[in-house]
Each structure stands twice: as C-alpha cells, then as structure tokens.
Image 1 (cartoon, rainbow, N blue to C red):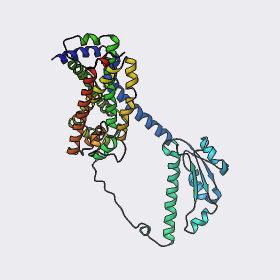
Image 2: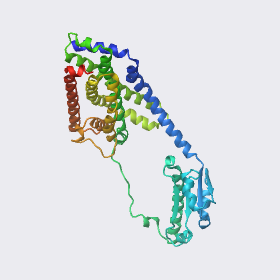
Image 3: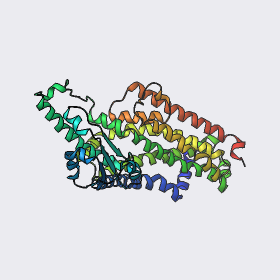
Image 4: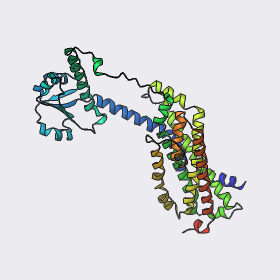
Length: 396
C-alpha cells in the first residue's frame, strides 16, 4: 500500500529530528518521574519546615485570662509578645513581624464563671503556608474549651451525654479504589491528554509546514501516491507519535510513583492494585481516538500554514483550548452522563476517572467511544479535503 511507503518515509524524517524525539520519548518518560518526585519532596519539605517554624504571637489582655496565657507561653516553638498595641496588630501581621495575635476581652473570666461564652478575637494571615499559625492556636483553644465544659458539667452534676443528642457514625460505602479514582483520576487524564497533544504537535508541524519550507512537499505530490495516501501516511505517523507520548507519560508517572519514598506504603499498594494491565489498556483505548483527533486537526492546520513559524502561532493557542475541558473534568460534581459523554476531551477525562475508580457505566462508555471516533473521523475528513485543495497546499 502506498500510504505505508509514505509512512515509512515520514518515520525516517522524524527520527532525524532530535527535538521531536525528545518531546515524544525523553520528556514524558524521564522528566515526568523527576517532576512528580520533586513536587512531592518540595511539598513535604515545606510542610515540615512550617511545622517546625517558631511562631511569634501577640497576646493582648493576659491579665484577663492568666491560665490561657500560661498555656500558650508553655508551648514549644512559640514566642509570646506582650507589648504590642491592638491597633498595630494587623499591620504587624501583614508585614510578617507577627504570625498571629490573640485579643482577650475584659469580661472573659466573668463569662466563663457564669457559664456564658467568652469572646476572643484571633488575628492571622490566611495566606500563611499550610495554615500553621491558625492550626496550632486552634489546638490550644480546643483543649481549653473541653476542660471548661467538663468543669461546668461537673458543677451542674450533668453527664456529657446531655449536650450530645446524637451519636452519629458515618459509614462510607465507597471502596478505596473508588475514592482514589475520584480524587486522583481527575488530574491523571489531564496529563496524558496534554502529552498526547504535545506528541502530535511537533511531528504535525514538521510533516506539514516543515515540508513546505524545505520544498520537499512538491516531490511527494509528484510521486505515484494519491493525495489520500499522502495524508494517511502522515496521519498514521503523527497519531502513533501522539499515542506513544501519552503512553510513555502514563508509564513515567507510574514509574515515578514507585520511586517516591514519601508515599505511604498502603497507598502505594492500592495504586499497584488499581493500575493493572486491564486498567491501563482501557485508558489507552480512550487515548487512541483522541490522538487521532489531535493528529488530523493539527496536520490540517499545519498544511494550511505558510511556514513553520505561522503553524506554531496557529497551534499555540490550542494548548489552552484543550486544557480547559480537561480541567473541568477535575472539578467536583462533574460526572460522566449522557451529555458530557459527547463532549471531546472532557469525556476522556471523566471516562478515565470512572475507569480508575472501577465504576464504569457501559452505556456512557459506548457514547464516549462513538463520540471520540466520530470526531476523529470528521477531523481526518477535513484534513483530506484541505490537502486536496491547491490553494491550501500552495498558499503563500
């Protein structure tokens, strides 16, 4: 078949381009594990640093609550500053001279003694990393409040059950796989959709606009191969590059996860149980038609462009376009249904989430596959029509 001869020729051209090979193989397979590992290690390091940070807290009105003041002053890694006026607290926190401030009202003790609520104002900065200041201050107040309530109950000769009308026990019937799938399954498709697009982009630009610039497109057109054979030959190679890049990106993620020591062992066992050959195969069946859709669309745009530079400027905004529906798939409440199954890219994100969670709906999955292959066929048809127009091929 002539299109296979064209495809063989395009493979040789692609393997000579180091930039394309890097984006197809080295970047997803090698850099993905490094990126994931670095991100988790940085997050873990920052969280540890935040937990060990010495907090500077202004305590205003210590004479009204000496016991509470002593509780805070006895804490490790916390410095109490007494001489800061209340009207300077907010500016000091904004300038990071203070981490937080506690303001005790004068009627604190009388309210406590009369079994009333004592009002306390706490000032902190909500952008504080990991909410360390608020969390550590809240822990002290929670413990103090429990002790005060216990004393009040003893004074009134009441049992703690009097103030607790319910004994509620929540039982989550979702399996660990389903919970993990809904959590992590949202962003995982985002990764291989993006890499699939990137894997198709560079070969498509090179085999369309690149051939125009090099002047080799006319040579192919003068060969015995038909326009359809030429398009199919180029399309097969671009689609294979997109599929391979997405597959390697998924493999890079799974390999990288195994090397990260910060991941708890029970979570790692769960990940290995979920990502079986069957699960990966199902995800890849979704990637294949998406790769076909990307490849045909990008090849058509590349053929339309006058030059490689113009093709890049046309294709660049599409990076944002494909990210938008993929990100929507990560939002809570967005589920695979009769409507979302028909929306390209979004349906891949949601279907992959259901595959990982192990809650696939056969009807919706069928809709997803029909939709994806339909859009892939339409984009290929558009690409062939564009290639058959002399005004498109020789546009200058």
